[in-house]
Length: 350
Ligand code: ASP
Image (cartoon, rainbow, N blue to C red; front, side, top):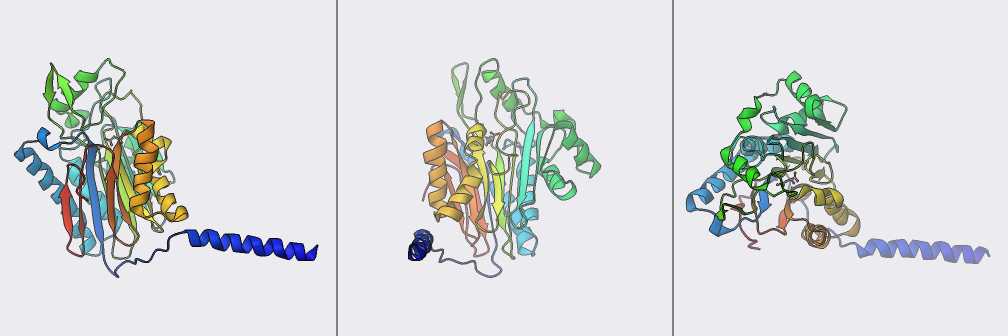
């Protein structure tokens, strides 16, 4: 009987060793003091033929400006949370993207914005939802993280807290853009929502204005701390009060120094249902998948089959940058302390 006990214990030990050896060994490491930032400006039906040369240049310049703002902070030894915030601020202030200025309209003709930020070192997180008087929603998400005991505040409560901490408040008319309003008119009264970058018809004319998109950033600083943030106006013609994946920690935004930081963009409901960003992190952590494999698994084998569309940017604990999307394109770019930098928007090139 005693022998049988030892045999069972031995079998158990061998089984758990074997399980561990199934995990691929992570052989890469982070260069000391290296840093990097990756950003996105939304995913959707982004095709070259929809954009004039000038529009492509405008996007490229704005994405580069956002990258530079975040990079400058990291270069000076600043923390990744500040870099993420700075990059997102640039994109929130631009009507090119669906965040802050230029956010899309809900079914009632109002703009309701969501944002989130997460610290991969402490797993602290802050998020806001359904706000329309905060000029830069990502700043308010940071306030929730740093100055409250909560993770997610919505509507009036979020605005009161932001104002109390001196975050710039604006009249909701600040967010008005005519083209966004046209996007809404095409869908209003129909049971449909639309990703910003999806092509749409007005009076049978293809509107090739795809200059909107949720924005996000992930950065790793010289100390190896990862932060992720996302800011959005949501989806055109969404119902009043609808909250997307962006402020749901683990769905559209997630950071953990042990694995990676992620910011997502796409049809939010599917990213919530698959807990997309956390799922990617878990596949890396517990299943030993590479970041590229984990992104592919969640976007193509989980979100895609449910009917969801979008993409994710990822920066891993070694400072390596990854992205993937199951939509036609995604505005995206990165800048690393190694000198490598890239800005792209159309189909995948690698
Ligand atoms: N994920 C956002 C939302 O569902 C939309 C987007 O990424 O464009 O609110």
